[in-house]
Image 1: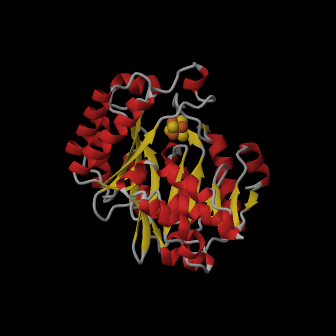
Image 2 (image 1 turned 30 degrees about the vertical axis):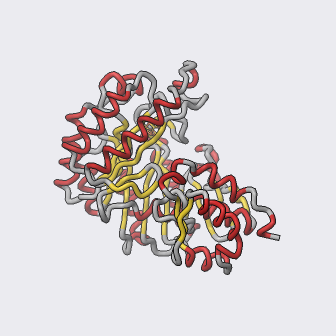
Image 3 (image 1 turned 90 degrees about the vertical axis):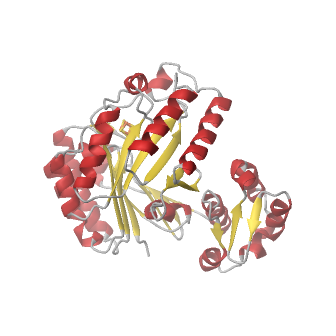
Length: 369
Ligand code: SF4
């Protein structure tokens, strides 16, 4: 039974130059129709009670206050028992009125799209906040009783130097009262504005230096790396995102969302017109046991805590060593995996070479007969 849900809000006020996500420009009338379609989808799906709810996008805070309230009220029957209720927001659109609504409906975590604090880079991305705006927004979130705040930061932007990145991270860890940071290494996608302008990805070595610098600096300031790209103060690791990495099931709600159950995964239509007229129109991809086992390993090894033997057994009725014993042993001898009675996890070196580790698991055809 799913206990987690991701709901996708496809609207944004402005379109960022690097963006290749499923989103469209906010339009009040379109958002009203989308809400009506969302209400229908929720009636049909009949969700079970949730322990984590994540409203992402797009930019959920782009909705007008009454639309945000309608959306959250539609979710009340399923969110009464949630431990973690996250909504993504951007600094400009997260007004006090919207924060009041979030607080009233039990939202207890805000994920802010900050990306950078450098004026020249923000301008290049078409983002409009300043460092002062971000700090003021974080303080307003706390003032509304929401004390679990995550921010997204991007590295590998065109014209971003290592010094700029270091300065941003320093400002964040030393002056912003936040509990969680997600890092995104930029890949320039052909359909983004950057891609259409022919802008190239920055040098791989500089990008790797940026990532290494972030790990060192964030850890010095008490942010523990618990997943390849995610860092949190103690007890603030995202409960919802761990559902994905532990390969647990989750609902995908809304146009462009995807979900997963025991048999495979599904993707709702990414065509807004289709969604408004015909609902989620999901396409289902069934996954065989072999594919699911590999996906569970691939996702779980992204976490510092690795894969739980018990969770693997509960999911597949087999001990992980029975299926992948020789590979695990080989990777252990190479110093890439560590093993104890409860779990299997990547060493520091294995974490850096995770793709190489995973290729070994992918190539294991014999184990599954
Ligand atoms: S990056 Fe986020 S905020 Fe920017 S356009 Fe894409 S979905 Fe919207």
